[in-house]
Length: 313
View 1 (cartoon, helix red, strand yellow):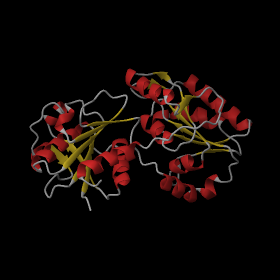
View 2 (cartoon, rainbow, N blue to C red):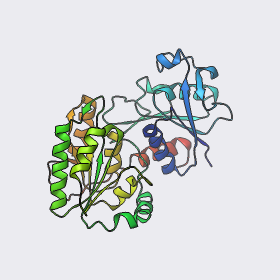
View 3 (cartoon, one colour):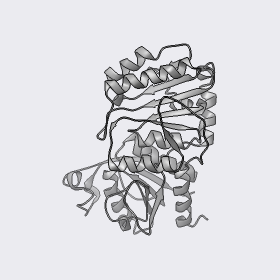
């Protein structure tokens, strides 16, 4: 069996991308969450010269793994350190654009909207994730009692909120709530979840409007039904701010509609544009129409390239 470490700074989104790749490989990773001491904390990834003292958190010591999956700015330093200390025996894979020369790693996996390119760079459509047919089947079974009473067609609504690039204003939230209520009144069932970034004011707007027998609004208590929503959904709506939720939704093969917000960035516009041009997502305008596309499997693509480099194929 291939030994595998996942090294991140402990952010759930980046860790889940690595976990998705590990699961696609069929390996059981050891998860390490690290931080950086000064001056690396401020100057990474550009400083270099990492040593054992550079890191806080979980220990990075021999025996070194066969495979390293690293993601996030602080993990760039860790990947370079492990590659050097293992004398190149560890295959070091950096997930997400490191913003430094990709040649510093054995393999770099980036989504198409990030600029890194090179002989050892694999470009995916979106972010790798943990969505698989089996995970959805398990989630469908787990949440049968909760979600099966909602009549089909069912719409999963994944709401993010304010970010560096986007603003979710009260006006946008009211329009979204009204559009969703109209869908529920026309025969659709709604399965709604909001994040902390949605904010208290916007969350209250949504809760005040989205009430009814065919609406389930998760209040944060009990087991998180996120995967259950994806499993039971006939349509999926996701706010524009979340690369991870859009990537996960597009990995189900179900129609995915993007909820527009105020603002944006060139990088995210490239992301949305590619998925739109490829027929994967559509912009939500209050109406839904079923459509087909080839579901994303970015974790599988990265795993296949790793197998080649490990000599497993």
